[in-house]
Picture (cartoon, rainbow, N blue to C red):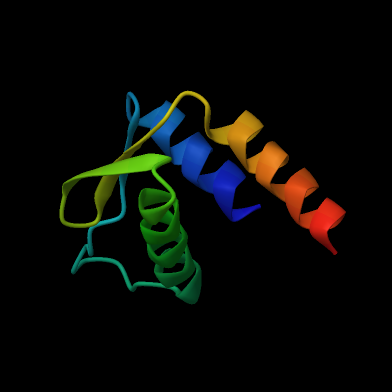
Length: 76
C-alpha cells in the first residue's frame, strides 16, 4: 500500500513525489514510512531522488515489484 500511495502522490504532482517537511502540518508516521519506502525504491533503482525528500518514480515500478515478489516467493 505504501507503493500505491507513493504512485498516487506522483500522479497528483505531475510525476514527482514530494515528501518534504511542512512546518505548518505535523509529520505523521505514515510520512516517515513513505520517505523510508521511497529511499528503498531508490536503492532498488526504481526511483530517482531529485531533491531532499523528493523523488520521481520509474515507469516500470509496479511490474518490477511484482516480479521481485514472485521471485521471493519462489525462493521461499
